[in-house]
Amino acid sequence: MSAIVGIFALSKHTHAQDVLDMALHRFYFEHKWQFDTLTYQDTRDDLIILQVGQNVSKSFSYFTFRSDSLRATPDGDRVLTEMINIAVREAMATGERVEFPIFRRSTTTVYKNYPIGHVTVTDGFGGNHFQYSDYLHPQQWILTDSTKTILGYTCQMAVSVFRGRRWIAWFAPDIPISDGPWKLSGLPGLIMEAYDEKKHFHYKLVSIINVENDPIIFSPVVLSSTSFGRYENTSRIPFLRGLFEHLHNMPAIMNEQLGIDTFDENPKHRRHHCFKERDFR
Image (cartoon, rainbow, N blue to C red; front, side, top):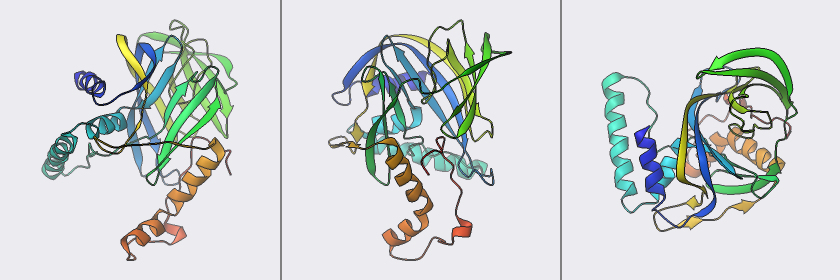
């Protein structure tokens, strides 16, 4: 956890930031999802950080944040190269797959109650960066009598059908924060675990930290230590449709960029991506 704190300290000095609020709490969620939702043979993982302030919260990937923060420093390329070399040596020594530290993982960042009464989402694909507005507390939850304990807190189960998926959430009434990872929120307590009924996506709280002087920033598009991009405004449905087409046409895109037919474009061999939100088709 000390390494994570160090990355936060580093990011405060890399470039000018738009501070939206000051966080009072920082929650860490283990996030696992099925990259191929048909075969279940490609499970991905991430660490999602939820910063919660008096008015605004921010949910984002630690690994993506770490990569962008390092790339924004003058010696970021050197540090990342060293990290890659270490990862390669570990992989060669153990024969196991490792996650290369340079790789960004989840690119979705969710700002709740920014602007007031709304949600701002930033995301991207194919080198393009987008921003769109969404609804605050969009889930309609049904509370149940089921309970279990997570990190010493008694949690109650709630269910909601949200944009094509049935979600199960476990929230802690003793933590009176109506928030959770990603776009999940609106319960009388912090969502400490959430997953869809097919277990394509799963969030589970692993750590709670009370913080001071912890700014919630609007993360810029980091291209390099001296270059920053801009978000293109869009809306949710067009973004998801564009992302879907991009992922399902990836072999053709890669072949076109390389100028040779290296990747198999047969539709039968494509991976089956199924998004958290399924109402865009």
